[in-house]
Image (cartoon, rainbow, N blue to C red; front, top):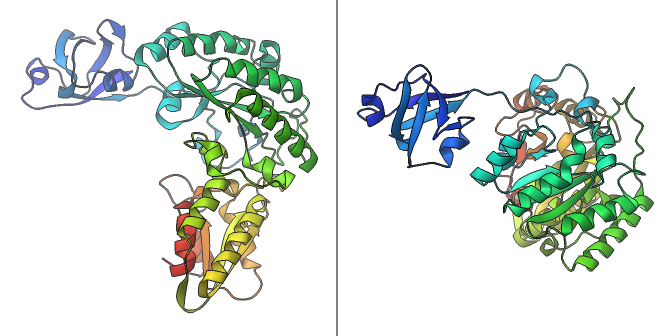
Length: 419
């Protein structure tokens, strides 16, 4: 449902009797779906069919609109679904399985395309909603139906061909389930997707996130260093075959395999950094570029909170900072994830309650604590568990808890200057 939220005073729309609260049924004869119908007609004269009022020709600049449609949700029951592995009692929004192509275009959310009608696919093409981020997982139709537990999931080849032939750019991902969509199937998937290059820009390869809340769910094994090394070698061979860095492995594979991270050039424009692709290389590069001799006013011990997988990287950066900054004693402070389970080792899934418990047990005294912003909800100082940053500070009775939202540059700045 698309409703008018405001009408410009003394405009032709206002003179025609159009008011806030009116519902737009069609725009130029096509069903009005959401704000995107207006976004892509900005400043144009359009024909609006308004419920119970008739048809009017107005300029889109004369109106503000608001969609009252619900977020398009997922029609799948993926064997690796992270939402199915969430504990009870968290904020409601964390249980919403969104699969909305408008959020993919506007926010970079990954979608599976399994809930799309032909009309919606036409709309994506007509509005040129590009780029989109697509959870492909496999290009083998039967296996995709099995992994997503959706009999319509096998249409992915047809959908990608239709979108790319219409000029839509795609960024794809494959969540890897060991023994199923890795090995030969991953090779087939990568080669098939690369056949659409450059409309398909890249394929992110990421591990399945496994929490301790998997009772009754499909058994999936965690991966070790040997598996990760073998996967990285196969990805290197594929990229060598393609002549471009098309297949992008998650940082976690490099950590588990104890491999050196690629240079930042490997990741291009970091189009999949929110997917854990290239985040570490970018952090290292930014830190190196920002690092220079400095001096703290007085001896200061700083703890840098991180997940277990990032501890080695963060500790190496702390040592570099200690060598450059007089009076600084910084160290990584890895926190075990007891909330989701110890198999969850990334920093972004740490909770306030685990950070609080770990800091409460910290040995010795410390002066400052640095917390990465990706542990907090976007635009809100609240952790996944519902604890707020303010509550954490109050519990610790410790004021100098700082949040780093500026990557490697921000980390060095906070270590060297404390602000």
